Amino acid sequence: MTIRHWIFDFDGTLIDSAPAILSAFASALKETGLTPQVELDDRLIGPPLAETLSRISGSNDTVLIQTLTERFKAHYDRDGVTATDAYPGIEQLLQRLSAEGFVLHIATNKRLSATQSILDHLEWRQYFSSVYALDMVEPRLSSKAALLQKQLAELGLSPLHACYIGDKLEDGQAAAANSLRFHYAAWGYGDLVTSTLPTEWHWLQQPLDLLTEKVQP
Image (cartoon, rainbow, N blue to C red; front, top):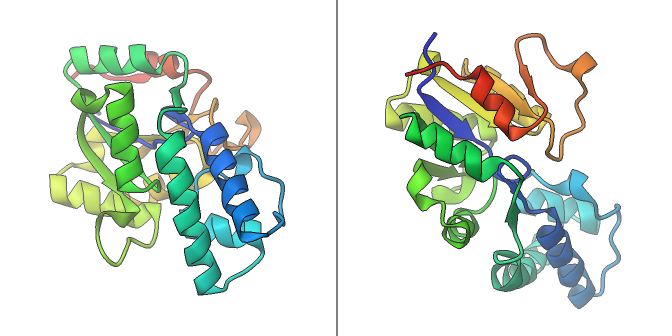
Protein backbone atom coordinates (compact mmCIF):
# COMPACT_ATOMS: atom_id res chain seq x y z
CA MET A 1 0.00 0.00 0.00
CA THR A 2 1.55 3.30 -1.12
CA ILE A 3 0.66 6.31 1.02
CA ARG A 4 1.04 9.52 -0.93
CA HIS A 5 -1.36 11.90 0.84
CA TRP A 6 -0.85 12.72 4.53
CA ILE A 7 -3.81 14.45 6.20
CA PHE A 8 -3.10 16.11 9.54
CA ASP A 9 -5.30 17.26 12.38
CA PHE A 10 -4.17 20.72 13.56
CA ASP A 11 -4.60 21.45 17.30
CA GLY A 12 -2.63 18.96 19.36
CA THR A 13 -1.03 17.40 16.29
CA LEU A 14 0.86 20.12 14.44
CA ILE A 15 0.50 23.00 16.90
CA ASP A 16 0.45 23.42 20.68
CA SER A 17 -2.52 25.76 20.77
CA ALA A 18 -3.74 24.99 24.31
CA PRO A 19 -2.20 27.99 26.17
CA ALA A 20 -3.71 30.53 23.79
CA ILE A 21 -7.10 28.80 23.59
CA LEU A 22 -7.44 28.35 27.35
CA SER A 23 -6.50 31.99 27.93
CA ALA A 24 -9.22 33.08 25.49
CA PHE A 25 -11.76 30.80 27.20
CA ALA A 26 -10.92 32.33 30.59
CA SER A 27 -11.20 35.88 29.23
CA ALA A 28 -14.55 35.19 27.55
CA LEU A 29 -15.99 33.71 30.75
CA LYS A 30 -14.68 36.54 32.92
CA GLU A 31 -16.16 39.21 30.65
CA THR A 32 -19.51 37.42 30.77
CA GLY A 33 -19.42 37.08 34.57
CA LEU A 34 -19.29 33.28 34.51
CA THR A 35 -17.28 30.76 36.48
CA PRO A 36 -15.98 27.76 34.53
CA GLN A 37 -17.92 24.60 35.32
CA VAL A 38 -14.99 22.34 34.40
CA GLU A 39 -11.25 22.73 34.78
CA LEU A 40 -9.71 24.75 31.98
CA ASP A 41 -7.05 22.34 30.78
CA ASP A 42 -5.86 20.83 27.52
CA ARG A 43 -8.49 18.09 27.61
CA LEU A 44 -10.87 20.75 26.29
CA ILE A 45 -8.89 21.18 23.08
CA GLY A 46 -10.25 19.52 19.97
CA PRO A 47 -14.07 19.56 19.84
CA PRO A 48 -15.92 22.32 17.94
CA LEU A 49 -15.93 25.70 19.70
CA ALA A 50 -19.65 25.93 20.51
CA GLU A 51 -19.62 22.44 22.02
CA THR A 52 -16.70 23.31 24.29
CA LEU A 53 -18.17 26.67 25.33
CA SER A 54 -21.39 24.92 26.30
CA ARG A 55 -19.41 22.48 28.41
CA ILE A 56 -17.29 25.05 30.25
CA SER A 57 -20.21 27.42 30.85
CA GLY A 58 -22.64 24.66 31.87
CA SER A 59 -25.27 26.15 29.58
CA ASN A 60 -26.98 25.32 26.29
CA ASP A 61 -28.53 28.76 25.96
CA THR A 62 -27.94 29.77 22.35
CA VAL A 63 -27.72 33.50 23.09
CA LEU A 64 -25.14 32.96 25.82
CA ILE A 65 -23.09 30.59 23.68
CA GLN A 66 -23.12 33.10 20.84
CA THR A 67 -21.91 35.85 23.20
CA LEU A 68 -19.15 33.62 24.53
CA THR A 69 -18.20 32.65 20.98
CA GLU A 70 -17.83 36.27 19.91
CA ARG A 71 -15.77 37.16 22.99
CA PHE A 72 -13.57 34.10 22.56
CA LYS A 73 -12.92 34.91 18.90
CA ALA A 74 -12.04 38.51 19.73
CA HIS A 75 -9.39 37.42 22.22
CA TYR A 76 -8.05 34.48 20.28
CA ASP A 77 -7.85 36.19 16.91
CA ARG A 78 -6.10 39.20 18.44
CA ASP A 79 -3.61 37.47 20.74
CA GLY A 80 -3.82 33.71 20.25
CA VAL A 81 -2.51 33.38 16.71
CA THR A 82 0.90 34.85 17.45
CA ALA A 83 1.11 32.97 20.76
CA THR A 84 0.75 29.59 19.02
CA ASP A 85 3.83 27.42 18.51
CA ALA A 86 4.56 24.28 16.53
CA TYR A 87 5.49 21.12 18.39
CA PRO A 88 9.21 20.28 18.32
CA GLY A 89 10.04 18.27 15.22
CA ILE A 90 6.97 19.31 13.21
CA GLU A 91 8.76 21.84 11.03
CA GLN A 92 11.41 19.27 10.14
CA LEU A 93 8.73 16.65 9.45
CA LEU A 94 6.83 18.92 7.07
CA GLN A 95 10.02 19.88 5.27
CA ARG A 96 11.07 16.25 4.82
CA LEU A 97 7.69 15.00 3.65
CA SER A 98 7.30 17.88 1.18
CA ALA A 99 10.83 17.48 -0.15
CA GLU A 100 10.24 13.77 -0.77
CA GLY A 101 7.15 14.43 -2.87
CA PHE A 102 4.35 13.62 -0.46
CA VAL A 103 1.17 15.72 -0.60
CA LEU A 104 0.10 17.22 2.73
CA HIS A 105 -3.36 18.29 3.89
CA ILE A 106 -5.13 19.53 7.03
CA ALA A 107 -8.54 18.42 8.32
CA THR A 108 -9.49 20.24 11.53
CA ASN A 109 -12.36 21.18 13.83
CA LYS A 110 -10.69 24.57 14.25
CA ARG A 111 -12.23 27.57 12.54
CA LEU A 112 -10.91 27.95 9.00
CA SER A 113 -9.96 31.62 9.42
CA ALA A 114 -7.96 30.93 12.59
CA THR A 115 -6.26 27.94 10.97
CA GLN A 116 -5.21 29.99 7.97
CA SER A 117 -3.96 32.83 10.18
CA ILE A 118 -1.77 30.42 12.16
CA LEU A 119 -0.44 28.87 8.95
CA ASP A 120 0.55 32.37 7.84
CA HIS A 121 2.11 33.11 11.25
CA LEU A 122 4.20 29.92 11.07
CA GLU A 123 4.90 30.41 7.34
CA TRP A 124 3.49 26.98 6.54
CA ARG A 125 1.11 27.73 3.69
CA GLN A 126 3.50 26.25 1.13
CA TYR A 127 3.43 22.84 2.78
CA PHE A 128 -0.30 22.12 2.45
CA SER A 129 -2.21 21.31 -0.70
CA SER A 130 -5.60 21.65 1.05
CA VAL A 131 -7.03 22.89 4.35
CA TYR A 132 -10.48 21.64 5.37
CA ALA A 133 -12.44 22.80 8.43
CA LEU A 134 -15.94 22.16 9.80
CA ASP A 135 -17.02 25.76 9.18
CA MET A 136 -15.83 25.90 5.57
CA VAL A 137 -19.46 25.43 4.48
CA GLU A 138 -22.80 26.65 5.83
CA PRO A 139 -24.31 24.95 7.70
CA ARG A 140 -21.07 23.70 9.21
CA LEU A 141 -20.22 20.03 8.86
CA SER A 142 -21.44 17.80 11.65
CA SER A 143 -18.28 15.85 12.50
CA LYS A 144 -14.64 15.11 11.71
CA ALA A 145 -15.79 11.97 9.89
CA ALA A 146 -18.00 14.07 7.60
CA LEU A 147 -15.13 16.49 7.06
CA LEU A 148 -12.75 13.75 5.95
CA GLN A 149 -15.44 12.27 3.72
CA LYS A 150 -15.87 15.65 2.00
CA GLN A 151 -12.12 16.13 1.64
CA LEU A 152 -11.52 12.71 0.13
CA ALA A 153 -14.46 13.05 -2.26
CA GLU A 154 -13.72 16.57 -3.46
CA LEU A 155 -10.01 15.94 -3.95
CA GLY A 156 -10.52 12.51 -5.45
CA LEU A 157 -8.28 10.84 -2.87
CA SER A 158 -8.38 7.08 -2.46
CA PRO A 159 -8.29 5.81 1.16
CA LEU A 160 -5.73 3.30 -0.08
CA HIS A 161 -3.27 6.09 -0.72
CA ALA A 162 -4.04 8.48 2.15
CA CYS A 163 -3.55 8.50 5.90
CA TYR A 164 -4.81 10.63 8.80
CA ILE A 165 -2.70 11.77 11.76
CA GLY A 166 -4.43 13.06 14.91
CA ASP A 167 -4.26 13.17 18.68
CA LYS A 168 -7.78 12.25 19.78
CA LEU A 169 -9.97 9.16 19.83
CA GLU A 170 -12.40 11.07 17.60
CA ASP A 171 -9.67 11.44 14.99
CA GLY A 172 -9.08 7.71 14.86
CA GLN A 173 -12.78 7.01 14.66
CA ALA A 174 -13.18 9.54 11.84
CA ALA A 175 -10.32 7.90 9.96
CA ALA A 176 -11.85 4.45 10.45
CA ALA A 177 -15.23 5.70 9.20
CA ASN A 178 -13.49 6.66 5.96
CA SER A 179 -11.32 3.52 5.70
CA LEU A 180 -8.17 5.58 6.30
CA ARG A 181 -5.00 4.34 7.96
CA PHE A 182 -4.55 6.26 11.25
CA HIS A 183 -1.53 7.41 13.22
CA TYR A 184 -2.05 8.54 16.82
CA ALA A 185 -0.01 11.61 17.83
CA ALA A 186 0.89 10.73 21.43
CA TRP A 187 2.42 14.19 22.07
CA GLY A 188 -0.98 15.87 21.72
CA TYR A 189 -4.02 16.36 23.95
CA GLY A 190 -5.51 12.88 23.79
CA ASP A 191 -5.45 10.38 26.65
CA LEU A 192 -4.99 7.08 24.83
CA VAL A 193 -2.27 4.67 25.94
CA THR A 194 -0.55 1.94 23.98
CA SER A 195 -2.49 -0.79 25.77
CA THR A 196 -5.85 0.67 24.67
CA LEU A 197 -4.86 1.64 21.13
CA PRO A 198 -6.81 -0.35 18.53
CA THR A 199 -4.47 -2.80 16.85
CA GLU A 200 -4.98 -1.28 13.41
CA TRP A 201 -3.91 2.20 14.60
CA HIS A 202 -0.27 3.26 14.71
CA TRP A 203 1.37 4.91 17.72
CA LEU A 204 3.67 7.90 17.15
CA GLN A 205 5.69 8.86 20.21
CA GLN A 206 7.14 11.93 18.51
CA PRO A 207 6.53 13.65 15.14
CA LEU A 208 9.68 12.39 13.43
CA ASP A 209 8.57 8.80 14.09
CA LEU A 210 6.26 9.28 11.12
CA LEU A 211 9.29 9.26 8.84
CA THR A 212 9.88 5.61 9.67
CA GLU A 213 6.22 4.77 8.93
CA LYS A 214 5.85 6.35 5.52
CA VAL A 215 6.07 4.51 2.22
CA GLN A 216 7.92 6.13 -0.64
CA PRO A 217 5.67 7.53 -3.39
